[in-house]
Length: 219
Image (tube, rainbow, N blue to C red; front, side, top):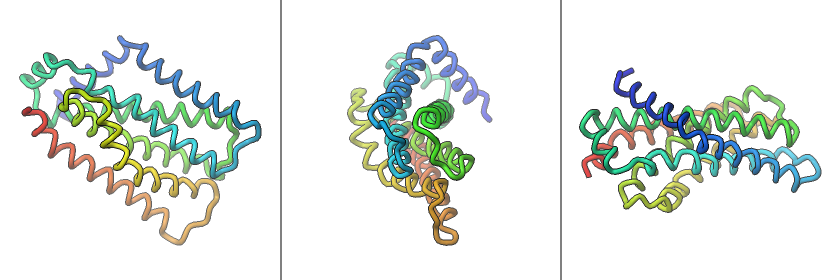
């Protein structure tokens, strides 16, 4: 991997450790949301409700965790990055950072769901893999949306406006794919098809980010 990409990634990680209140704030958001669901549903939720709630929470966690990645950068700092690195290297570092952050948040969410809302899974390992794949997919989309919104007068509302129409089909595929881990029987090859569809969408989003961001960078 390019040294400048690694340096930019290291910079984002160090900034996250220096501003721990942001990281802990997201964890508190996850914990409080899951705890409210635990208090609101006295009986153990069935598999369908459990699965749906999990992915909806994943979506809003990603909006809170990833959306700040570009909006937090000042104009002066962006000019500095413009002078020392290329737009492709910069967007790759942001994608990697947000992917790592979302993987951590997804793992924490899954752990809290299993602790507080029981475990209706037939195949926990398979669902964990789907969760990690889904966390990456959602983070890719909102990283690109955050980059676009940052160039539009840093309007955070644009992230939701542009992101949700793109993420809803992806979220529906993830919810359907997750049902395999709850014991639902699929047609032969359907799980592989859905997994391939998610990976294909990820590749498409990454390609769009690498193509479009240099034009945003120039502005």
